[in-house]
Image (cartoon, rainbow over all chains, first blue to last red; front, side):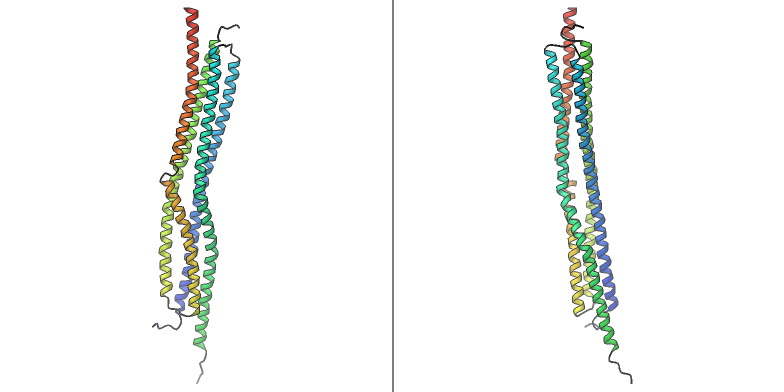
Length: 166
Length: 160
């Protein structure tokens, strides 16, 4: 049996304060972690988007160059099977360029989709948990403080009423 | 000018330009693939660091909640106010569990990335890029060989 009547108020005050501090600190650190994850994912995706743009620019550059090569070929006095072969080669080259840059683009889209599929739900879960804990920590702190204050009042009343001086 | 079959100097210039385009495409597409690879490696390294950070935070949270709950249990306090505090502690526990759940969810995904979840896509991208770059270069250099062949045929006809 304890020597206390109802509660050790100093201990309760400390406990309430420790819970409030710990809850806020954990939420804060989890929030920082979420920010770092979000930043890492968006930096990576932004880099990949830049590389997709580079792949498209490479296609455009090659198309322009092939157009120029074709024009140059049209200005050359050249007939026969080898000329026909050249036209075929130019078409094959354009096709290889198109295939190559499309594959780069498709590969990057695939990687981005995988990253999205993995981390978008995680970041959403973080946001929901942090929003919940932000109000939860506050509610718990208020509840604990209210409980401790009420207990303090009860004890004060118990200790300070009913005394009759001689 | 009247040519029989072709203007060899002009065709040589064309062959040279074509071959140069092939080399440009191969080197630039390969460069893009390398930069995708590098970006992925950096992302994986970052995930490895964040995964370690998340694990440490999850362990700390567990230890702290065990400590605080133990302290709450050992606090000498009875009655309805104690009941109210217990309810508040339980609610806070739920919130912290939700945060831990999010952290653990991240750890799972980060681990798969660190352990090579995106490696297959990257390998495929590199392989495709090498193939198409090589194919473009083969076509372009093949044309140069054809021009040289034509030049040799002319030379043979003209000079016996």
